[in-house]
Length: 81
Image 1 (cartoon, rainbow, N blue to C red):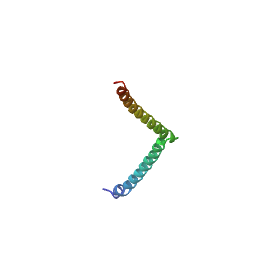
Image 2: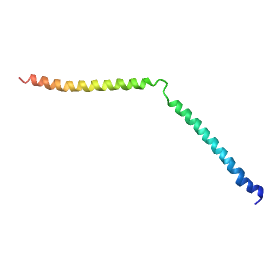
Image 3: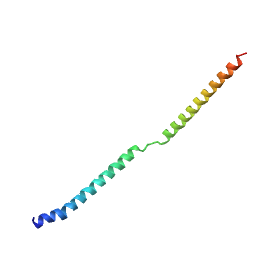
């Protein structure tokens, strides 16, 4: 092997590989930042409002079910006589 070839293998190639790896890392971090920015909501209040509305609706549904069951039981009790 010539000395020039050995210099190429042991000195220049690792430096090139390091530069390429650093470039790839930078690209990945840039794309990750852009992807994260795309997932952030413009108006974060809307999902919170929807959750509150769903919670209230669920509770009303449970209350109405509870009342209808016990009201039906109470009416059956009154009409037994």
